[in-house]
Image 1 (cartoon, one colour):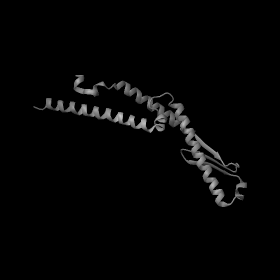
Image 2: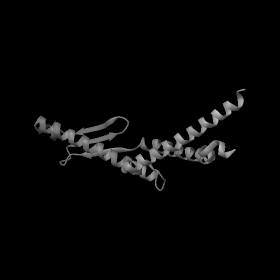
Image 3: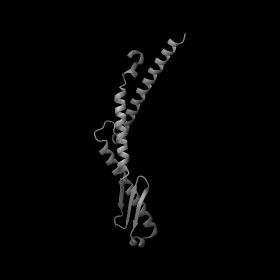
Image 4: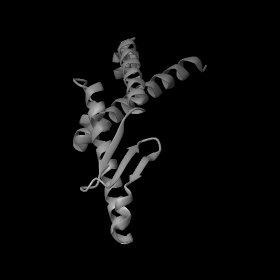
Length: 150
């Protein structure tokens, strides 16, 4: 009977389900922790401070009254730079949380993001497995159809 299903028969459904549950639990944990992650930055003189979140972007912007003495173009550039720095800080903090949650896990999203070639190879591997399983299932269904038809 196994030969009728080809590679499809070799799939360990229990293991796949277990891994899917683990991935879902990790994703839920990640989502929960990311809600608290922020990025912060301030200008070199400390007159402009920004807090940045993944959910809403700029969560807080502090401009010291002394910053108002700057030419408007300089103040605008300073604000833009501090916002960019806060966004970069948020990205760094998000990566740190992801690394903590997925530490030691095969195919962790952090590792995949850092290694596009590995991600591409893994995607191709999964695609090939699914293509093979689909082909085997189609072949088996065709055999069943032939047996059923008079």
